[in-house]
Length: 348
Image (cartoon, rainbow, N blue to C red):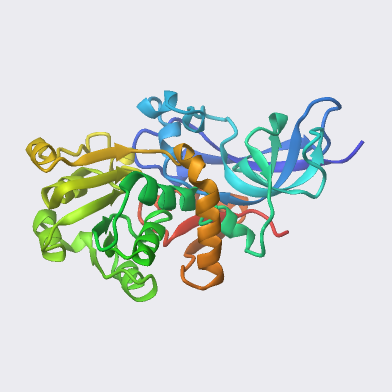
């Protein structure tokens, strides 16, 4: 019939309404049968790499307006499995489309094994010669959010001035690289000297600054964009959005990918000057990566070409082992990660 394993997985002990701490999580174990019930359509996956993403914190809150928006954002209750985007290998399948040893990508879990009911949100993965970790980040939803968010939402023109916040994060670093390759002028901000150097020296940003060293963000942006900002790719919200809007050109576009400042502090609010929005005819648009699937083929083929030609750098921050998931997640909100945060759960 197959064998049984002890599956280690991470869950929350309690709802989290501020900044997360290691003590909010626990590592649990449960026996798991490595075979699929006949006629069940379930797929049992050995998890290899799992994506660590800030939006998961909104799911862990006792209440968030995001909970009802999309199935990716449904709330997580204490003790429950936490599903997350990742790559794994099928160990058993009752589903006609998946067989043992297939590599798969999609929604798996913060654990060593996942039972994916009905094979939902999984697809077979062809690694195309790239490391498996790339399929969790640059070739996964982070890459799609960056590429689609920039091209479909911001609708750039060559030569436009682009500002990216959290520019060394999983999405921001790619937005900056795509924007440069497209022919825009790009400035990013990040929270340390090391990250600022990475943006300028390795990723080819035209300029970058450490926002923690700035007291007046409006005048900072005026200094970096004497001719104004055409596109602001927002990952943080709050004062940064206010300062960007104050420095925006006529018909400027703001693509709001995330507002990490607000995830940990619900009192943090952006208050852009609405007169600017009116008189400069500024567009502010929120989006989710799931909205961008119609651009998926273009995103993958472009990104593959860039990777093969060495035109884009992959910045991954990988921790090892399921027990490192809580600290990896907590670290996102302290700015510990450089690039895409991933936990490698097992070797192939």
